[in-house]
Each structure stands twice: as C-alpha cells, then as structure tokens.
Length: 367
Ligand code: SF4
View (cartoon, rainbow, N blue to C red):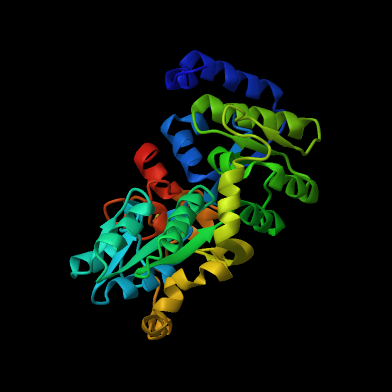
C-alpha cells in the first residue's frame, strides 16, 4: 500500500476487524502508548468496531499532557522576565501550570513565541542578541533529536544568549513503571511507531521478557493499528511475549543511528516527573555536562529559586488526568468530562493537548 486512503479502506478495515474477532477467545487489555494512536482509534471509531473482548487502554504518550505543572510554572517565571523570549511549540501554550498558562502569561505582555522547529529559537537568538532566548524543550524521543540539534547548533555557533528549559521524557521507562504497578492488568502494548523510527525497538526486548507481555511496534492509520492489535492478540492467544514490528515501512530494529548519536552527545538519562503520575527513575533526559552551559534552570536559577511552589494549587483538584494517563479510567468516566471540562475550557492537560485522550473523546465520542 502506498496512499493514506488505502490504510483507511473500509472493506480492508472490516476484514481486519473480523480477523481479530476470529482469533480472540477471551478478554484482553491492550494499551496503545501514543496519544496520536488514541486519536486515530477514536477518530475512525475502531474502539466501537472491535469485538467486545478487546479492551483498548489509553497510555501516557502525549508529551504535552505529561509535562509537569511545575515545569510550566518555571517557563512562565522565566518568560515574565524583562528581555526574555520563551519559544515553544503551540500546543504547550494553553496547558495550565499550577496557576496559569503560557497563553495567560503572553496576554500579560510576556514575549512567548510559537515555533515550528527548535532551531528557529537559535535563529531568534542570533538576530536579537540583546535578549535571552529560551527554548522550551519538551516531548518524547520524537522531539528530542530536534531539540538536541538546536542546542548543538547554539554551542557550535557560540550563541551565548540561548538556553533550553528541558523536560524530555522516554517511553521504555514509562512502560516499565506501568507494568510494575500491580493495580491493574495490561496484557499487551502497542508501542509508538514514530518513537521507534528514531530509537529502534531493541530497547523493548528486556521489558517483554521481564513482564512477559507482547510489545508490538504499531503505526497510526486504522489498518496499522489493527495490524498491531492482531499481532498482539495472536501472541496472547498462543502464550507468547515477544517484540514484533507491525510498522516495518518506517521502523528498523536499530532505528535512526545519527539521531541516537545526537541524543547521546547532548543529553543524559535522568529521573523525570510525569504530570499526574509522579517521578519515574531514568524516564527523562537532561543536558549532559558538556552542554550544561545552555541549561535554562541554571541560567535563571535566581528567578526559579524565588518560585513559591508551596503556594501552588492544582487548577482543579477533581481533574483525574493522572488516572486517564495511566489507562486506569476512560476520559468519559471523569465526572467533569464534557461539563465543567471541555476543549474551550480545559481543566487538565489531557483536554488541552491535540494528542490528549480527553480531547479525543470529546471531539469524536461525546454525544
Ligand atoms: S475530562 Fe478534564 S477534568 Fe476530567 S480528567 Fe480529563 S482533563 Fe481532567
């Protein structure tokens, strides 16, 4: 298949659904990690077409959703300083911190700019040398190489008025933490195809073995997702637990080596706080020693030291996005869903982000 329509063909989708129904003999809980996959499932109604014994759980793979409120507070505190420019991807702007969002802060006069490529932030730094330019470097392994490339460019060109506020997260540690939690059962995983395009899938072997779960590298179109589910169910029904690649048109076992080399050069593994979930060991990336000069947390340590996080309150304590992100509840099980909390008035990050599960349910499933 070559064109996107072919991956959405109704007859082929029906056939794939029937195949899954024919092999699934008992209930299976399968988690798709990525918010992009959640949106595709909801948009194309796959959750309604699948047989009742296939339960899809939505995972924490939405970068905007898992960025902790405290990190947004830090970005706001820096952006509110004179002569600073905070550069961010657009979907971060509406995500609430503990008290307000970057969009609120922009309305108050802060210079917050939306960028489409991280290296734009370096270009702004070069063209406005009298200002401090800060890249809000968030996301999973998909955004990390672009952020690393920008930071490396700043180092190579000795751009002294550039720094990065880093909040990078990694998928394998999240899977490890979810499977190590005995609260509920996940029988199999659909790993995110775009992350594996960069990182390969060799990093999942030990997780499949440790927890005896199938992990299937899966894409984003309806037939991609159904292929991932089918491979997962086939393994579960036959008692297997291996790593399989259902997205071979992009993903190789070793991934994109130059991108991985770049990550290795700029970042190091570090503990990271995930919004609504908490601290997960080695689940994030921070700047390594040779790039620490560009660490915005160090450069603005005086400003950030004054942040009184003890005064912070969650925007809405009733928001259950932490449970949504772990697949423990479906978005429409939150009592605020579609009532007090809607995309035009979001109370939690999972309703703000274009990849958030609550936004996906509101957009495609709310009656
Ligand atoms: S519907 Fe809104 S309040 Fe409820 S979990 Fe989702 S983001 Fe939070």
